[in-house]
Length: 274
Ligand code: NAI
Ligand code: 15L
Image 1 (cartoon, helix red, strand yellow):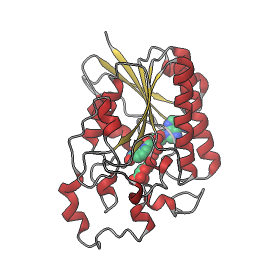
Image 2 (cartoon, helix red, strand yellow):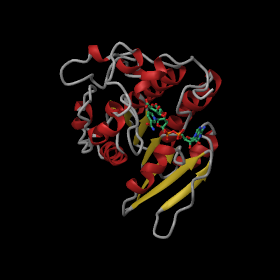
Image 3 (cartoon, protein in one colour):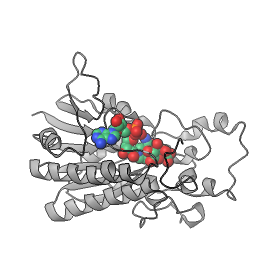
């Protein structure tokens, strides 16, 4: 039997990294984005949909026959409130309702470290900050991720949908600065994490840090390991190259000791690049 996995926001950075890694024999990847993802190549079992997660009718169609939804679509950095509210918060409500109505039993939600950005290194117990920390968002973007998690919890409690909320650190090809040496999740570990979420045996609700097995980690891997996420990569292989030209990590600097880094001190509600 073929398994169908709907991925929203599939044309974004993370979606593009995951597309080849989540391809499996017997699995159809249904890729949805505002900007239509590239159609499948030869031998690639892929369907593409150009739509917004805020479009109720389109999401009903997209969820029909899906076994699982990986919800990545939305604004991925700090932005004005109206867009965050529409795309991230209301968009996730639309995704969850469509998944429920289509009988989808499993949803993986891209949350973010910015849901809990104001925790700091000194607060980390031995073994690292647990993944189920009470929210301390650092931006309107972070608030939206708290809401994403709350919607996941609601739909788990009411309808028994299995929901994994991933408090992702930084999932890119490589780390690039001192902070990313502990926030990094390699693309291969990202795929391992999504696979673990797609394979949970009991319906539940959980929050998990999305990070690799980095030497410099101070966020705990325990919640991920409980569902079989065993990361293999370590950002330390890039450390010498990255730290060249930087002074060592300076904990007097808030951006270097807070979970959310620069998001904690940047302008609230303004596009990150403006
Ligand atoms: P991205 O900005 O590269 O991609 C987001 C994608 O969502 C884009 O292709 C965009 O067109 C699409 N999108 C935006 N609004 C949409 C809507 N209304 N309907 C359908 N599609 C829409 O972001 P990235 O890095 O790929 O992140 C994916 C998800 O993971 C986001 O939810 C982000 O908040 C979350 N995340 C990513 C992290 C990372 O390190 N890449 C870290 C923490 C969280
Ligand atoms: C996020 O939530 C963003 O989506 C991503 O672009 C990175 O900025 C990441 O957090 C991070 O904290 O490095």
